[in-house]
Length: 273
Picture 1: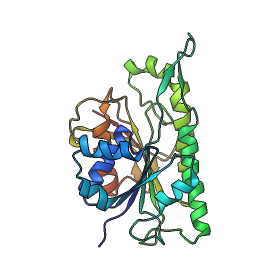
Picture 2 (picture 1 turned 90 degrees about the horizontal axis):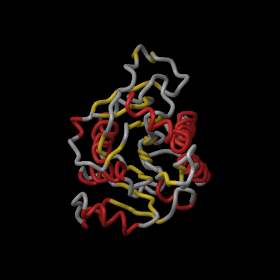
Picture 3 (picture 1 turned 45 degrees about the vertical axis):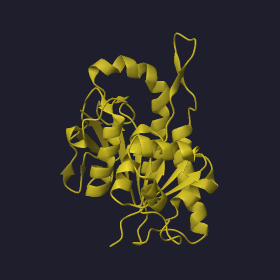
Picture 4 (picture 1 turned 180 degrees about the horizontal axis):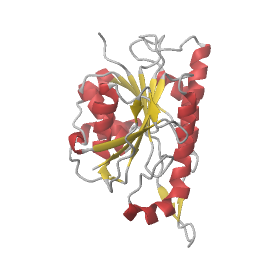
């Protein structure tokens, strides 16, 4: 049985690049949409010790940005079966805040609708592929889509620890609104373009030394803000509160737990140490 194929968006980000590296180490064929392909290649070789031969044989890199529908369609087509979609989609598109001279809003987003626009562009690109008769993966199912979001965005219960709440009250209006809209777009789509969703909400991300995915603690809720707490007889445990987590550990957890175990569809998962 062939291994599932996966498309990565935002692949030069710390968490997404980590997930991609683990996918390549496991021998999975992947695509990645990035603005600067050489940056991704250098990162995989130097930071993750992925060989040039592995990159050449398993990774198809498409140059473009997350609002470029033509480039997105190329990333969504399976490299091994061009008449089909990839099996899975992982998107970690995001932006960093920038400082401005303001007491009320000292931080602003450099691109305040990037996450929402990116998710909607992925779905719109799937409409274009449908017109070409490309609607499912090789197994006949629609792709599973995982999106990296954040705590403090859209949970039913408080998922931000007390010590972080003043910080998040400043950052929230900048980054969280965009992440929230991205989540809502993906959740609303489940069953239309995608077979289901997984939303990963890590706590405050760091570039610190990874501790390993087995050190990562998780909690989860069903669906979005208005979803019931019980589904198919399974009670959601609620979010996991914590202060920090390394980007590399988020990526490893995403690949080894969320994507490989197959138990996380339909869930919004909080991650922390």
